[in-house]
Image (cartoon, rainbow, N blue to C red; front, side, top):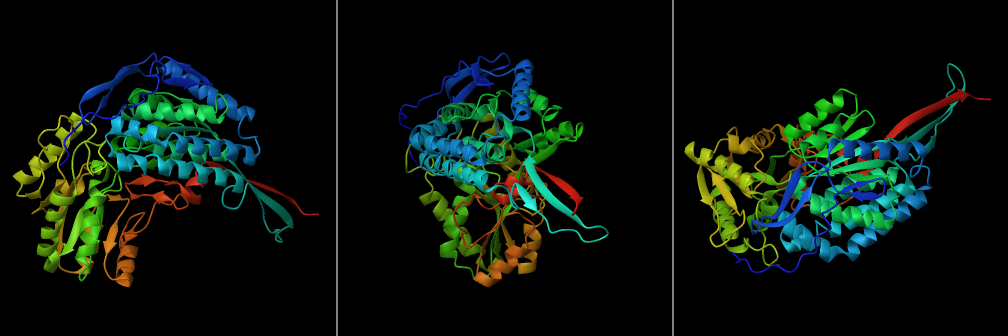
Length: 497
């Protein structure tokens, strides 16, 4: 594991004003927060969140600009141009943003330079393309004439849904804003953005770039703080859509609050995703990527594949290779070091919660094959990559999302049993299948989940939806389906001449 050294200088955004309403930055009047570097447990900044009055003002600004057509009435090519400028600014400031992600979230710098910053630029550019092309079917779709019972003509108008409240998590603080705000602005919506308190510094930096890119005052507003701010947004009568990514517990609160006004919600929630290693799969090919899939970003990703299913005849060989890989090829330590694969968890409280799960599993008879403890010589909130066996598919550690570099190894005897174990979860977000191509595709089709990577899959694609089955969410993000979430459809019909 890598030792912690003095990190490079990180450029922090101005946190004296973290509320951005109607084109102006303001000091918060709400609760006080401290942003802490999870790799060193040292303070980065102190800031004050928005209060209810400032949150109301942000919604009012979004409502006014939407109703006035400040943004939605602009030609799509103009909205696209602003989004492309923002994508360009994110790329231009990529290293600065990456270092900020490392400091605030603890992501290893190689991940911070790729998924955390390069990918958002791609996603924002994709949103610009969508603004020009319009949603599937177009902004205005002429329908074939109706012949019976009377001859009539019709057109479908796809119009921006209105004011969007976007509530984002800490684990990918810039990319999750790109996922939500990019398509919302492309559609012509006005937005009120609320980031996790643990991702606020990154979000402030991104909103300042959006301001520089030319997003008009009042079209993108930023409020900061905790659950009390989210509660105001979720229940607000002037909000037309709440898009939230986070825990199931908070997602349920968002849904309950929005239900009072029948406000539409898009929720991306938890996951407990499986890796299925089919009989005869190439273990040399499967082991390393399977380990990295649950260790990426210290396991703090809803799509992490943390239940690994291996045929009983292959368990011994797979286990030996997996332990060797985790102990020899997954460095833990300073996230500023390009050699580091696993950085810290986001907080001491979160690490304590994960360790509690491990302790209870061991008390029930589980065996930790590797990891399970804290690396020596590091001051932050680190946890060694951990592989656990001797558990039942129904055990707590196999059913609860830990959001940590912890996976369980489960043996199966038949492929049907493997599919049943993989589907034995209230979640259905992601999966990974290894094996002969056609057999792996057939198994992938049987899994109750929104995304399946077969034999490693491919790169991130903005043009496909990220969607959860069961309790992993409602609605879609990204892709044509995700873009469609930000529109309403209006049918106009009249007698044909």
